[in-house]
Image (cartoon, rainbow, N blue to C red; front, side, top):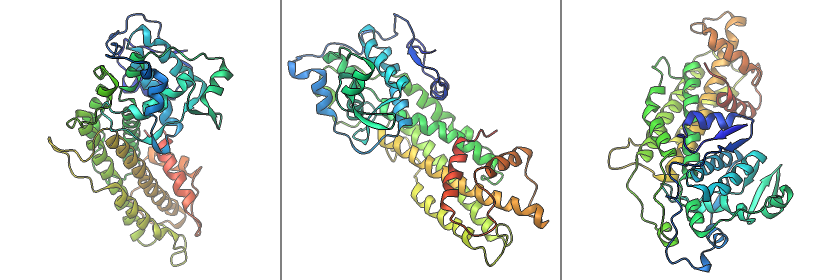
Length: 399
C-alpha cells in the first residue's frame, strides 16, 4: 500500500513514482492537514440551488476529445492531494477520488473548457460528477453511467456541501496534469535525443529545463485562494502571466528545438548516398522521411521567446500546447532513430565507413529498438514503424 501524504510537498518525483507503481494509493492517516479549513470557508448567501450536484451539472460544459486515461489518472491524484490538504471535511471526497484511481474508474473529462491558473472549474466539474452519481465514467473498456459503477462497488456518494463543491472546483489540477506530464516526457525525450546523437554533439539540454521543473513543482503545492461564492469562482478575468506560464513556454521552446535538430539529422542521413538504402535507386521509401519530419517541425512552431511581459499562451492552453509539442518531438526523434538505425544496419554488411562506431549504450539501444522496428531491406509501409519508433523513444529506459 502506498500513501499520499497531505503534510508533505507533492514533488514531481513522488508523483511520477506513484503513477509508475502498481500498488493502491491511499490518503495517509493524518489528522492535521497543513491548510485545514482554508479551502472550505462557507460561501456567502448559500441557497438550495447551490447544491453540489446542481453546480457540477451546470459547469460540466467541456467539449472536444476526451482526456486519455493516463491524464485522468494524473488528474485524480493531483485533485486528491489538494483536497486532502483541505481539512477533515474534504477527506471523504479525496478518498473517493483515490478509490476511482485504484479501481481504474476514469471519469469522462474533456480537453477544452479551462482557462487554467485557477480557472479549471469546467473539467473539474466533469471529474466531480461521478462523486455524486452523475455523469459517465470509463471502466474496463466500457463507457458507463457513474451511478451504475458506484452501485457495482457499493460506494455511497460522499457528502459534498456547497463549500466543498467550491473547493473541488477551484483548483488548477487539470492544468497541472498536462504540465507535469509534459515535463516528465520532455526530460525523458532529451535523454533519448542525447543518446541517439540527435543534438549533433551539442551539450545536453536537460539543464535548460531546471527552471521549468522548479516552477511546475511549486505549482503542485500552491493552493488557490478559497472563493467566497460561485460568482467569484466563475470570474473570467485573466490573471497576468505566472511563473508556471513562463515555465511552460520555456519547456515548449526547448522541446521544439530538440525536434528541429532531429529533423536536421534525418535530412543529413538521407542526403548521403549509401547511408540508408540497401538497394540504391530502388529503395526510395526512406527518402520521404525528411518530408515527414519537416511537416512535424511546422506543426511545432515557431515559438517566440517569452519575455517578462508576454508569453505566447497561458494557463491550460500553455500546458496543453507543451504536451502537444512534446508528442511531436517524440515522433521527430523516433524518425531520426529509424534513419540512424538503418544507417548502422548497413555499416557491417557493406563494410562502409558511415561515421564513428556507436557507443555501447547506443548500440544496446539500437539492439532493443530492432525488436520493435526491423531493418528495412526493401521498401515497405513505414507508418507503423514510425509509430512504434515514437513509442520506443517515449518508453525506453535511456541512460
